[in-house]
Amino acid sequence: MSDILLKTLTEETRTVEPKKDEQQKAIAVLTSGGDAPGMNAAVRAVVRTGINKGMRVFGVYRGYNGLLNGDIEEMNLRSVSEIIGNGGTMLYTARSEEFKKKEAQLRAAEFCRSKGICGVVVIGGDGSFQGARALTNAGINCIGVPGTIDNDIACSEYTVGFDTAMNTALEMVDRIRDTAQSHDRCSIVEVMGRQCGDIALQTGIATGATAILVPEVEYSLERDVIPRIIKTQKTGKKHFIIVVAEGVGKKNRVEDIANFIEQRLGIEARATILGHVQRGGSPTLRDRVVASQMGYHAVDLLDRGIGNRVVVMRDGKITDLDITEALNMERVFDKELYKIAMTISI
Image (cartoon, rainbow, N blue to C red; front, side, top):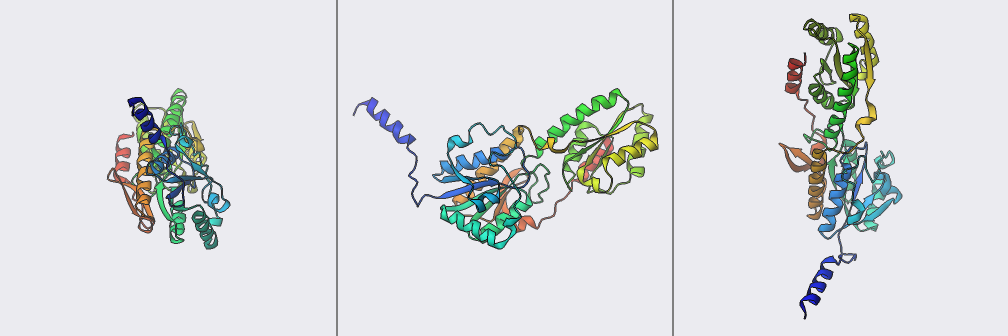
């Protein structure tokens, strides 16, 4: 056999895809709950890792609703090309009230079996993981991957999307600072995070905020904000930034905080709510890499027949925990970092 013919046969053999018979393992991937930058990187990792391991991989559209409505599509290597740098999620996302019902969970499991799907990677937050646990109990192995900008999943020290959201907030607050400085103004900026103050804390440190208000720490405007502004004024500073986590809004809206400061100190104060701008945008390097690591780990677990786990970051390393154990954990706020912020931001 000539060398040219041998080379041609070898190249053709390398490009032959595995037969899609009934014995070939199949898995699926979905994104659920709020979108987060980096979700696409996780989807990409799941699809390509699965195919590399000889699996069929299905993309499920619009979260658990996709399993209930049959809204799925088989993916190939090119299905996830050029998505790693995109914000949002190519699979779309939704919250499914119907899936909370036992009947719906059993129906979703039966649909998976009808497609030969033995495992599902669920990218989302605590609510999504509760659905993953229910689907596992219905007979379909599920692995959770933490994807939420809030960084509020207790079992993992980091969630996909958090770094991008912080950097977006950082850029926005830096821009607000420019105009606050030009007008000798106090700007109160609300960032996202629901009942988790991590975005506010780290953004506040990075922007040199005069005060940072988070749900995890009790505060009084009269005790914790006004004196800090007065103290800073005495050093010659005339513009101020107050960063507020959205969970604080149940006690004091940012507009109310701005009005209080203006009336109490006689300085112009403006409120800004950054809102969903923090959810979008191209994910940072860290979110792309961590999402890729977590997606790979999730598929590796399913390949070994393991389900009912959540992929997490612990001590800077990617590992996994039992879903029930993970859901029962209580999140710990970094009070030492908060102490540092209050010491240096004056």
